[in-house]
Image (cartoon, rainbow, N blue to C red; front, side, top):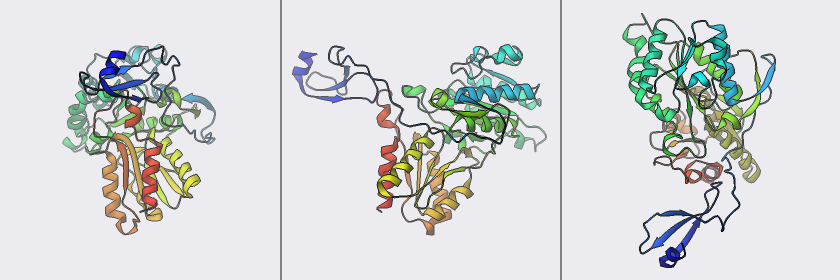
Length: 392
């Protein structure tokens, strides 16, 4: 280490948030560009825990659906699946490792309760999982498929886009696979890197015939998932994996539904509209508080919830009132769903806009590992963009 430091022009110390240890970028003759080397334990023995880029904000306890129970997000998903299997004798759950509960424990206990014919494992073949689900749904049964990570949904892309989404149309509605729901863990998790952190919702937003939903909390997850399962169209339900255990709130024990394609105005405001979905909703809620405290700016916060078909009316009504719009998501900027929202709002609300629409998103790079804290659109990036809009 000392010899390397001697040949290097200089040492630039980087501290990756919560990465536990110091990372050095060595520059100079004989040292490969971008070479990373961990500091020795003697130099920094204090291991720090990774700090999430958001603070989960639970919703008020819902009183209109009967008895509630404290659940995290994966328990809320389990509860929804349990309700569906109990209500619908044709419902089946299948995917990689779901029989023992799944890698995130979302199906734990369901095989024991409902039997191996209704909750069962599949081969490691995403195309086969979705194709099998389409076949089950076409017979009239309820198919609930799990893709273990959203990053691995792409082998099933053809089955989803060219088969599931078009089944109803190709037959003039003589037959369909509308009782198919595809669940998948989604989004950044703090250490997922290239293949366990992606947010691929925009790929499917370009495909008529399916619905795409992303919840922000346990209460939302259960209600929206039940709505997807009951819906008469194939649905993709992306579950923010970082919230599986980080998000805890009171959730009704009995089944309930939350309407699809209807955004929720979480906080009303008059100066700026902030839109996000999934984990990013909690980021912009914090940004709204910062804007009020530091700038005296009143923000209207909207959780889009359903990506496609999305709630154009609620969004445009808000922008007409505020005159400014900021959209934030974890997926890369170029071609992200923020682009579609921005284009539609520009067409519908052009004369009401007081500043250019702002998109605060991930970078146009593969999702990094140790540099994830620099990649994600955190509250500081969103706040800076909001401040520029106000000063435009």
